[in-house]
Image 1 (cartoon, rainbow, N blue to C red):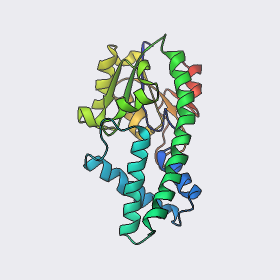
Image 2 (cartoon, one colour):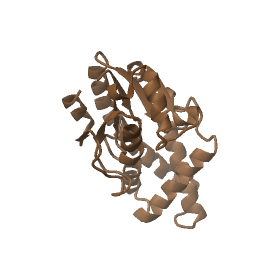
Image 3 (cartoon, rainbow, N blue to C red):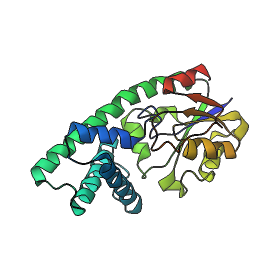
Image 4 (cartoon, one colour):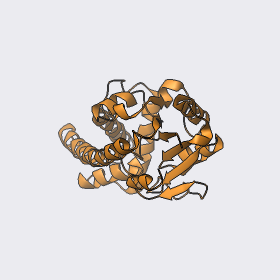
Length: 233
């Protein structure tokens, strides 16, 4: 094995948990009176809004992204008359959600940094991520940029997971053959399947996904926490 490709969201910042679950915990922390089903609809609306329009800017930190996600979610809840509140209360609850989620990410980024530092002397490393055009700003802000030889970001290259082409680009960036590359990700359908299709080995962090449908048995190795990659690499 000569090179590693890492996913970002859900892999390095939540240790295998889909961000919807973390945000929902933030909603509960802020005591926002909506059901989980209503929240999930708002979450999907927010993700689509951020994907369609240049709401996220290249220099935005992850906290900025969280703020913009929650603003879109609250806008949906208000437009659908699911939950409305005064601007002051709404802003207060938004900050509670963002604070909870950002603190959660920081804890896991600390662990990810330790894992990446242990692997860096042994392997070339590339990041492949579906993101909004600001992933490099986030990596710099969190002190992770130094660990990656290249970053392949969907908003920049114009192709998104689960299209295997984005992993072909990742393999090319390593300068290695696909058979000598291991992909580490939390999504079976978006990381493991396309990486396998291009000929990479895979390590699946089997955590708490978006739904139970994101599952399979085709990964080279299956783990439950990011630290466990060190057992196989």
